Image (cartoon, rainbow, N blue to C red):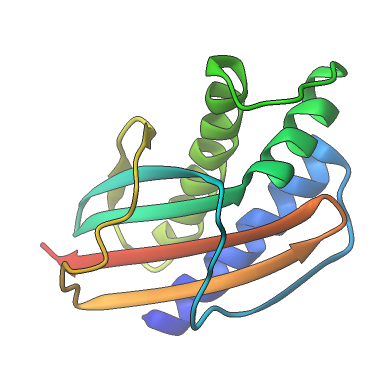
Length: 148
C-alpha cells in the first residue's frame, strides 16, 4: 500500500502542477528529511477506510511562485490570499490521490485544508513522503494514515 500511496501522490502532484501551473519538469525522490526555515504547511484530513492526513510543505518562495502563476499577480509575502490559493492546490491534489486509490476499492474522503505545523510525534500505520523539485521551487508531501 505504501508504494501505491507514493505513486498516487507523485502522479497527482505532477498532473495538477502541469494542468494548473504549466509546470512540466518535476523530479521526485523519497523524502527522508525536509528542512526549510520558512514554509506554508497545509494539512488535508482523510477519513474513511483510512484515517489520517496529507501534509503539504511549501517553502514561501514556492508558494509565492505558485500563486503568481495562478493569479497573474505579483505577491511579495504570504497573506490570506496566498494561503487560500496554496490550500486549494493541496485540496485538488488530495482529491486526485483518493480518486486514484479508489480503483483499488479504497473508500476515503478529504476534509477541508488547514494551515498547521505537522505533528511529527504521532505514530501511523502507513507513512510515506516525497520530495519534489520543480521549476517553481521545492515541495515536500507526506501521507500519514491509520487503518480505520
